[in-house]
Image (cartoon, rainbow, N blue to C red; front, side, top):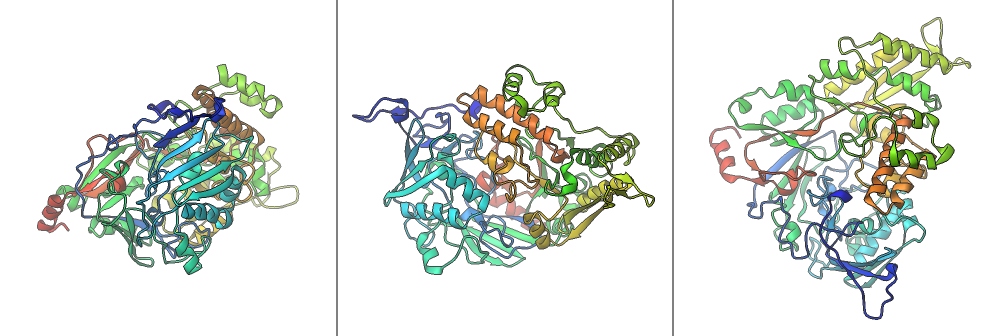
Length: 625
């Protein structure tokens, strides 16, 4: 986020080079769009890590369901958890968790496989200067040819929505020599998400792919060797995966790695459902548990290991906006193209009752796609936001200018079927042409029954099942033929990918700054097939506001456009917002430690926590583990 950036990446005018702004050459050890970096070229380590953190021990977590592949980039199959963490990119990123790196800045990147980069002020090209010492786990060098091969592999065999978006923006990739790679960018497009896009692409070993004939778009259990600090040590399909820290990792000396990657092994244990997983945690079969089940958090942690102090519960701060999760409408379904139908269905969800009766009052109701940030649209548009919306003319519906930003509806917490909301919902359905017949079912003029199906994964929690069941019961009261289908994890994944649902509980992404990934997630061009746009949202207004944000040249103008984007996304009404936390719940056996102060954008459990051997020995001596 631009407001969080401070530091220096200074322009260098090369001898004989024209001084036009686009020809100023910037050389730096990292990259941010606004050109400023917090950490200088000679930084020793990130501020929030413990540079003296000991190395050793194991941390173990769980994953639900099954896996049948160690290739995380295929649309087919179910990839093993963390299978992407063995690969690195030119600029460093926290692949294991998806958290920003560094954790105290948003969208800055520092050299990892690349020791430096140079680009012109106009950002029409970039050259990365790679570290000659970089090696894959099999000992072969990481070269510029591997970078170009990986870039092209994603274009040829990667997810279609990703490949098409990148191909339009990145028009050339060339290895200048073994350790210099140049990318050329298209003219007439936003300069956002160009350098950081190519700088953040995983790098694969070209020789391995050519020797094995493996494809990026096919599931497989053999993992290509990566260049990262962890590699696959072993796996037992549908039971566990073990990643081991590579003692011969080429990059231990880099400042970007100081105080990080501290566990000798990271083990993932698989369980059929959340109940089985929790019982296994209580027994010490795995040792770190992010908790997402409110009932378990409220009532489940009263077992001997907790009472004896062997298991720690903690609430970790989280400065990122909450993930925009909720019940997502499949806008490709004819019946759901009428916003009145979607609004009526939404009124069947009673957040207040759900939170109080099923979730122990632990959550807050989400309204915005950037909840609790300065970008959240509030009330009527005013000032610069209003002026920008008016400048778009008829593209902006009048009600967006004259009515407050859409908020989630309120409900009676004391009874599931809020009669006021149900009456309003039935009125909307009547207006939309879905009348109640003699059998109590709603039909349109053609006699078709209004049917809604919501698939849920059998590996999910009992609480989620209860939430969906209560929602469906309210829809039935409206005369909707509603049901939820509990299916195994593999079938659920297939239906999710094929968009074979009416409504699904899913997520979009929050945003703190502009990036072309917004088009991939919220835009029209790939809406028909993008896995990142589960509603299939295609809105000319949303597209235009994303473009305005991308075209902005100041932080202030960017934030105005993003606030208007939040307002427009809520107006489109393609998701029923549900609940959120402004912190993370975790429980762990008391043998892990972390820095006293966590950075705002990363909890860093797999990144910069560490193992305390003395505490682990004490647990074993006490018979706890």
